[in-house]
Length: 271
Ligand code: KIV
Image 1 (cartoon, rainbow, N blue to C red):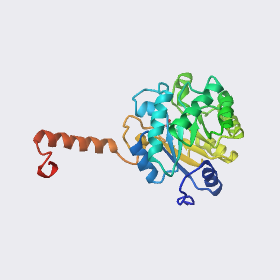
Image 2: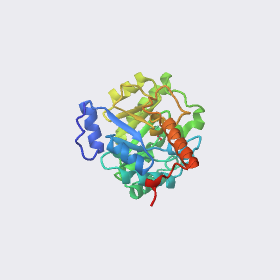
Image 3: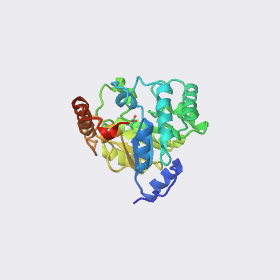
Image 4: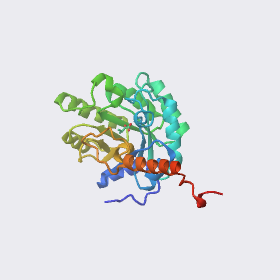
C-alpha cells in the first residue's frame, strides 16, 4: 500500500495520516548531499541526519563526540539534496540534556542553519522539560527510546533493552509522556518485538523501529549498514540490501591496476 507516493513534500501531518491509513513509513539515515539526493529520489519518506555520523562518517566508537557544529554541517548538506522526504536532524549528546534553555538554543540553531524539518533527541521523563521548550518554539520533535546510544556509558552494552518488566513499563510511560508533550513520532531501538507492537498500538503518533520488530509503524536503518558499506556491524535486526564494500574495493582495485599499467587514461580520455 502506497497512498502517499504522490506527495510532493512529506510533513509530520503526512506521517500521522500514513499511520492512520496503515501505510508503513520508510526512514533511512544520510549525512551528505549526494547520498541524500539518491535516498530522496528512491522514495524514502523520512531522512534522518543521525548522530551515527559520529561512527560511520567520523570513525568514532560512540555517538558522544560529535558536536552541534558537525551535525549542522551534515544537516545543511543533506537538506540541499532533498525535495520530498521529511528531514530530521539528531541533537547531539550534551546539547539538550542538562538545561532546557540550552536545548532550545541548540534546536533553534539546527533549524535556522540547516533548514531541516525537525529534530530528534534521546530519552523520556529525564528530558521532557527540554522537549516541551523546543516544541513551544514551534519546532517538531521526534523522540528516541529503547537503546539510546548517547547513554552507552550508563548501560555499558548495546544489548536488547526493556526485556525486563520494569524497563518495559518505563519505556511505555516515557512514550506516553513524549506523545502528550506533542512529539510527532518516536524511534524505538533494539527492544522486544512484542513491546514495539504494544507501544505502536497504544500511541496515536507513528512509531519507527530499528530492531523493534514488524508491529511498529515504520522502519529505520543506518544507510552504511543496509548498503553493506560497514562490514563490522551485523546485528540480527540488520538486513543488507547490497555489498557496496566489495563493489567499491573492486572498482578501486581496478583503477589502481589501470593507473599502474598505464591503461588509464587512454586516447579517448585525454585532450
Ligand atoms: O543516529 C542514528 O542513526 C539513529 C538511528 C539508529 C535511529 O538514531
